[in-house]
Amino acid sequence: MGRSPCCDKVSLKRGPWTPEEDQKLLSYIQEHGHGSWRALPSKAGLQRCGKSCRLRWSNYLRPDIKRGKFSLQEEQAIIQLHAFLGNRWSAIATHLPKRTDNEIKNYWNTHLKKRLTKMGIDPMTHKPKSHDVLGCGQPKVVANLSHMAQWESARLQAEARLVRESRLVSHHYHSQLLNRATAITHPTLPPCLDVLKVWHGAWTTRPGKDIITSAMFNGFFASNNGNLESPTSILKSSDNMLNASTSVGLLHENPFITDMSYVGKPSNVYEDWVKGIMDNSNELNKIIEPIDSTHYVAHDDDSIGFPGFMEGSTNLVTSTVRTNGPDDDNVVGVFEENDINYWRNVLNVVNSPMGSPVF
DNA sequence: AAGCCGGGCAACCGCCGTGCC
DNA sequence: CGGCACGGCGGTTGCCCGGCT
Image 1 (cartoon, rainbow, N blue to C red):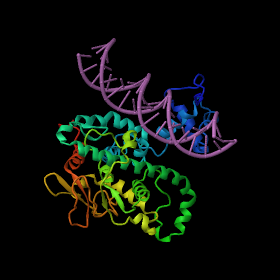
Image 2: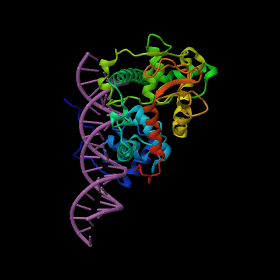
Image 3: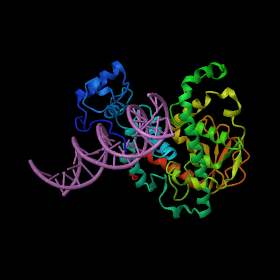
Image 4: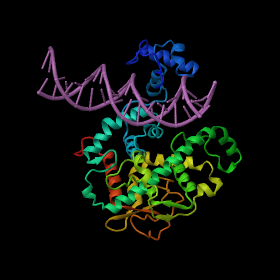
């Protein structure tokens, strides 16, 4: 009943590629494009299955691949994106120019995971392994479960929508932009998960479009206190949590929805945000300010880290911490000490010299 | 010098979603 | 509507190589 294998495993070559095979594949694709992968091997004179050719091309031969050691910025991005996206290597890879998902996956499994483990941080949850140290009580765990569930729900909806849109956008996007001369900035949308589309999806699918749950902040900051799963794996158990009540905070109107002049802007903003991760991770400390012994407030300062992500989200009140935010137009959220410390730890880890006691 | 062991990574496997017929 | 082809994805395997005994 299962599918037939993609190739005749008896007659086709497997294992490491030879330079001659690489050359055949490379020159064929450069001349003809890959076309149908299944048909490619015979046309290119290769005794390989199409799948093997595709993998060899996408993981090794593609001209836009950077090989070699990962930079500190890339490590930071991987850790932060993994906290945000889970084991979704292809999504992570879209934010690391010239790196393949396979390479990132290998690097995570062989380097970063071990480093986080040695730090006492669970590489899957991105939380400290000792829950007792956190002092997280049961109600807080439950609250965050529901927050994460809502975040995950919104994210999945938005991703599904993005996939659908991506198929339409090549046909419609250019004409749409032509009709909106005020907003032409990018010829294409990012070919990947777009966090702002997640927000968009959450806003547009909830009854009140100007309401956002604190789960979104908690999701972004991976603040799933306690023994929770990663944003990806929590999907398995989220169904029964979706009806859990979640306190919400009021937002200003979402400009991406109400102001059509923002057409095209989300991709810019998100790219800026990713660039912010890559370039300005250490700036996190600059936008976090303690308000008492255990709570912190985040300011929305466009001039520093995580640019744009907080746009349209002023005066958010995060229910898990307090009911009133500071009287500051730039305040976008209040976070718990554990979250702030977690991110500081992560950033310290990736910024530590390899010979530091951490390792 | 030889054998063992573990780390790193390229490649493979199997499942899934989508589009086409 | 169902089956199939195809591409994409994440998990896993197995080989290679360097370090250690």
